[in-house]
Image 1 (cartoon, rainbow, N blue to C red):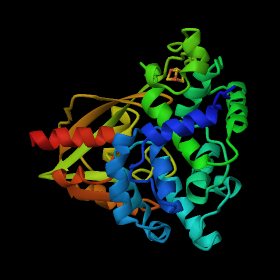
Image 2: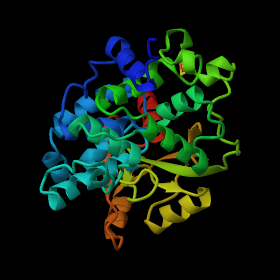
Image 3: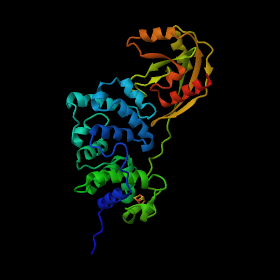
Image 4: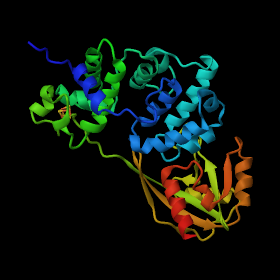
Length: 355
Ligand code: SF4
């Protein structure tokens, strides 16, 4: 009697025929290139990553060039991709690899996971693709495939559910060919077993999929228990003199740390105090249309106030602060080329278009 192919065998056979084989970070054993792609792909779709990946590698072709670079250069190339702690950690890890690992990547998941920004699943993916290790991954897409295929109830972000999924992941690993298997799982999750409207008709796991059998595909994996996000608001000052605008560097670590930003305050009163303290004059502020921005933990409404006034007092003031706050006076149309948080870029682009 013919044996039913194992889970892994189905995934591997499907990957060979239908998976992705020509992504820019495939067909290489270069741990650096694989690492950069894995970090960029966290919470981000392939289509959004491709351009950033090419520009990043052109500027930083290896771990040594990344480690040597100032953080501002790294942040500039990351601007718009979001989740900026990924860029800061990438930079930190590059310095650790050059300083403590003599420029060579750790080869095991245990070594890789000791670096900033590399979690258990990312460490396993790098070890598999760069060094042919036998290790299990469990990113968001793979969690979805497992939750559906094996009917795992509960929100995968909960520790108990996640542990159960890790157990599955480890138990399903094939004895050999982990690379094609891992790529297959990633491809399945990204192209067939998508969050909405998965293509079950073309899925190699359909005959064993619990969610498909029980008509629970739309239900699994269970959503995060809903909690309304708190709302916050702030004021940002667009201080302009002729065609130039004033930017300040965000402290790192922190939200948007290391990026150029407009001076931000809790409210208008705090903005007024700051302008006075800097020796400037609160001069006919113009309210610009607010910008909405969603973070993972809260929702932010930015109320921009634009003023035209001499910038010199602010430059002097910022330069004289104890830590010497980094600031930049820059032509409005050039400011949008800098590493800016997405809503600030949107705001300045809008103002530049109307200037
Ligand atoms: S049959 Fe459908 S729900 Fe089940 S693993 Fe395949 S694509 Fe996902």
